[in-house]
Length: 200
Image (cartoon, rainbow, N blue to C red; front, side, top):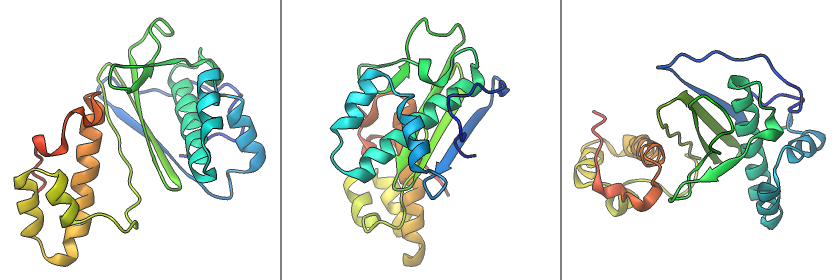
């Protein structure tokens, strides 16, 4: 689902069940025009604008802006009483952004991930969640990185696969592990090799 063409305009409430997780995604492309980016920039609070202006690389700057616009417009779909520009966030002790206490009466949770040309925002009620997206065409990734960061059982699982399947399986593990540590709210304070998933 794409970002709205007019992010300042209010939207009808989107329903979300108590046991559901919704993931909203946006792909950067021609539909993200300069005028739309200017409207996204007007959604930022002072702290976000300061961070945005500190970026030197245009790609990183654009990625940050699209990600923040995605979070703000997505949250307003579920809490339409708060317009996209009114959201305020506080970081937990590990740096994960959360909705500022007292801003809304409900227990809405979110998590954001972005990579080159793509962003995803997950939302749920009450339960902390994590989402991760990766640019799988990058040069890095595979068994050599798994040996450095994954648990022994996960590395063994990769090595049992045919060579042509190992890279895809690496990213299956990587995104799952990244989403997990984000859901826990602790980031890399939980080393990736200290827990295991078994995908097969």
